Amino acid sequence: MSESIAITVVGSGYVGLVAAACFAEIGHRVLCVDNDEAKVNALNQGVVPIHEEFLPELLGRHRASGHIQFTTDLSHATQASQAIFIAVGTPQSQTGNADLSYVDAVASEIARSIQSYKVIVEKSTVPVYTNDWVRRTIERNGVSRSLFDVTSNPEFLREGTAVKDFLHPDRIVLGADSDAAARLLAAIYEPLTSGSYYDRSDAVPGGRSATDLPPLLETSTKAAELIKHASNAFLAMKISFINVVANLCEAVDADVDQVARGMGLDKRIGKRFLSAGIGYGGSCFPKDVAAFRYVAQQLGIDFGLLAEVEKINELQKERFFQKVRSALWTLRAKRLGVLGLAFKGGTDDIRESPALELIRMLLDAGSSVCAHDPAAIERAKLEMPPRENLQYTDDPYAAADNADALLILTDWAEFSRLDLKRLRYTLRYPIIIDGRNLFDPRVMQDLGFTYLSVGRPSQHTSVESASTKRWP
Ligand code: UGA
Image 1: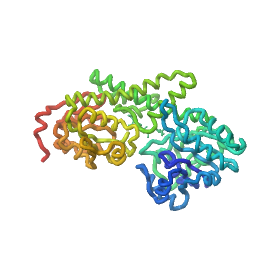
Image 2: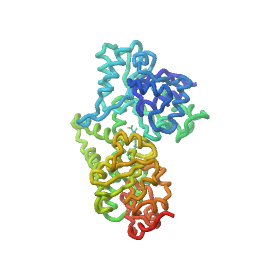
Image 3: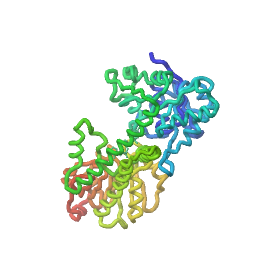
Image 4: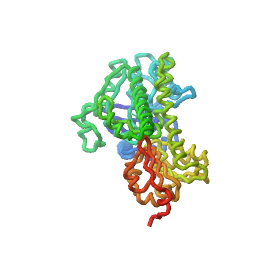
């Protein structure tokens, strides 16, 4: 039987909320602290603020058992816990550097309440050397060095599959510079590393099992901080790389899917994160690539490669926009259906979404847009309120209704299951411009679509003849 540890998680954003729910799920007693009183009240009443598979079930289960509680009282939570995970936001500042003011404020507040030994854990994505700053901040507040350790336990969860990623991780990285802190962190993850969690009949299903345990990697705190930034930057680089290869494919009429498959079968390269598209977005990659580049620059290391990764990512959106323009000749007064608002499928998150940026560009160019997304409409409306030239709809076919073209901007699995014959006759012209390569170009041609995607040969059909047919 694993030890139940008293844990505080500070911050109830994506990482904090998922980590808190998952720590409770593996048997710990969790206090989740946020300074937003309305949010804490809502969480205590069972409201789940983000769209995330398994999260409502876990929060419901562990709120009911008292294993997870939400509070604004960081001082009490600190005193009641052995480990305090800092999972507050680290937004991008104007220089590209991560803004660590929330981490700083939380560290000072924790310091004021420390009376016995605590392990402070960085869970937010932070630049290397942040642990030093947190340690100094706590010391400056008069806390003896023997009463705390600062560690780094980066999180690698992806939005949309966050709970599974947490409970069935590729690896668990524990960065600690003292044995006592390393032991406590290892004990927290013991239900996963020993496999006892996977033997439970009510365990969240995923890739791991008692015979395929997640490896635990113990490192220095600095190495752990670097692992997180380097991993995100590397994945972003993979995406930018395949996007340039896709552009090359377009120039020579080759298929980037075939090229990516051929590359990915080499185990040293790997198949994943080689999907060409309209560029990466979200709350992590854009911010983390910029922050990692900034850290390197501060340390006098030339990491110009990351500037290229960012540049390619920006150009990829512009290139897609031009593709839409050249398919439709002019964009003024065109009615466009848009499928997808979230930065990727499976989430309602629209932060740094390439889809929203493209919609803005299309509106600026004089088109009108009717957009559908399975989860992100409400969030999108807050950022881009509906108006005469921008409508939202719950029905994907309504987005396509009488449109001059349909654009696919997010890789929702639902979209690949749409009734294409129905779409064909719903659109004014059977033109689909797919920024996520969801369909087989040959199938689309057989169905009579003009189908443009990213890095694959275009399929054209006679628009005039197609437009006269109506859906029965
Ligand atoms: C990313 C990382 O994948 C996680 O490991 C990490 O923990 C997380 O950031 C974080 O730092 O918190 P996430 O932002 O949820 O997770 O999204 P991803 O699934 O990585 O996708 C990022 C963007 O890249 C999306 O816009 C997606 O559409 C795009 N993408 C992804 C591609 O364009 N091509 C691909 O092959 C893969």
